Structures are given as structure tokens and as C-alpha cells.
Image (cartoon, rainbow, N blue to C red; front, side):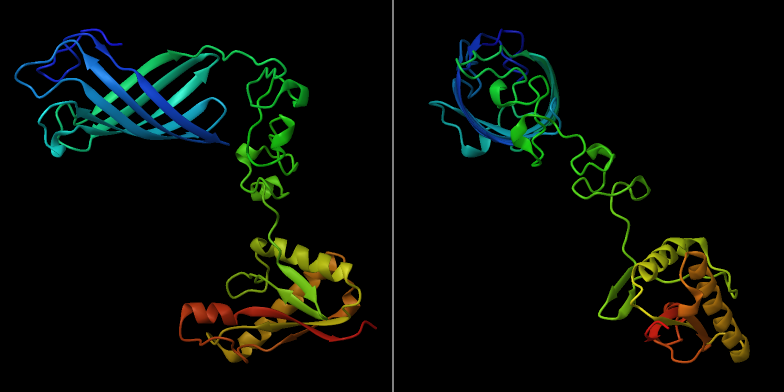
Length: 330
């Protein structure tokens, strides 16, 4: 029911009483809700000079629960004047979007809308807000549900905390703030279903090394200082994993570390630089617990490029260190 607080002729509210009963059809699954409303608006006052009167109203809507308390709602609204000679283009059609925030039995809502057609009463733009009160539904005998999460208290391990319905252990009635149990709350976890660490935002550390079929595969690149043999700090995680992999796989015997450069500069200098870089990698792996007797080094300078040296990208690929298994462990 609405009260006569507006002006019919200016299309701002109603100049008379109005009653608007509706039938609501809704379906909810998890965090998603779908629905359709159809109703009839009776007006006590019909302006004589406007094709305005009683209306049939209808509108589909979609809701998404963003949290246990906050819900996004998107809907469309249309109205058709009954027994009026009005063309279809004059029917008001409006699109609305807003947020509902639940506090106990109260809902606060705020939204905005704009007209889609040029129908009578269609707004160019409007903002709406309000407060709603929802009375608790009567509890059915044998289905007590204190936290109103749809799981009966007798089956609910957390009767006062609603289930989070995130697809992980949703049947126990408890919210799981850390699905992968890695100590990082799901709200802050970039990989909530995979055990990780804080250094990688809750995701597993990237795998740089794989030993398979007697071969060492390196998914990364050892970085050095410009024109120098000192290892850049960015390569520490890669060297850590190479050291761990070699220590954990003693069946991988003798390993040769080959150094290469691009073709920029003096060839003799490049060869010496490649030898020094290979030696730096060997020293770094020994520091990480790898037996030095398993490791040998060679420097090839600018020989055997794997990409054309005509571009910066190609030269970057050629500045590399390779790991070659040369035989069984002595």
C-alpha cells in the first residue's frame, strides 16, 4: 500500500492511495537466487489527461550472496496499464541494481536504477534506499535451525554460526575460514583450495625443477649481474630447489654445469665469463649441501646459441646455464 505523497501529473509518486499485491516466485541454490514477481497495482486516483491507471506489473530478478550479510540484487521492472489505449513503446521498463545488508531481522538496502524505455513514469535515473523488517519464519517441529543456514540444529556442528556455502564441507553447518588449512584465511588466500604459504599469497611455491627419467628439467633461469659472475638474488629460490632436488635424488650422478653468453663483446671475455658463471652456480649448490664431487663446470662463451642474437630477447635466451647429467655417481 502507498500513501498519496506525490504528484501524478509530474510523475513523482502518486496523488492518491494505491494498493499493489504481488505474487513472488523464487528459487535459491547456494549463494544464487532467481525469481520473478507479478502483481496488480490499483490506484484510487486516475489523472484525466494522462493514460495512467491500474497496472499489471512484472519483473525478473537475480540475487548473489556476497557474504552472509551482504547480497547483490539485480532486477528489471515493467508495468502495463490496464484497459488503456497505450502503445507498447509507452510501457515503462526500468533496470535496477542494489545491495542488501542484513542486521538480525533488519535489512538495509541501497540501489540505483534508470529507465530503459521512454514509457510514462520511467526515470532517467533514481537512487533508492530503505529499511525492511523480516519476521522469523515459524519453526517447524523437528527442524530447529538457530543460525538459519538451512541445516537443522540436530545435524549442525556449529548451531550459532551459519554455513559459508563455498562448496567445501558445506554439510556440517560450520563455516570453514581456511579450506586448505595452510594458516592463511580464505579471504586473503589467492589459492584457497591449495596449501601454500604467505610468501606466495597462499599459493604453493612455483616448481622450478623436475628430475624424471634420468634427466634434470629446469623451469627457470639463473640470473647474474650485468657482465659479471655474481648471482642475482632473484635466482635464490631456483638454486634452492635445484639443491634440494639433487640432494633428494642421489641416483642422479655426475652433473656438468655449462655456461653460455650472447655474442656481445669480446669472444675471449665471453668465454671466461661463462666459465666463471658456471663456477658460481657450482659453488652455490655446494653451499646448499650438494656434494662437490658430483659437479663439474665448463664455459662455452657465445657458442651454441639457442636463439638468434639479433634481438634483446634472443640474446637474453642465449645467456644461460644448463645442467647436463654426464654419468653415474662415483
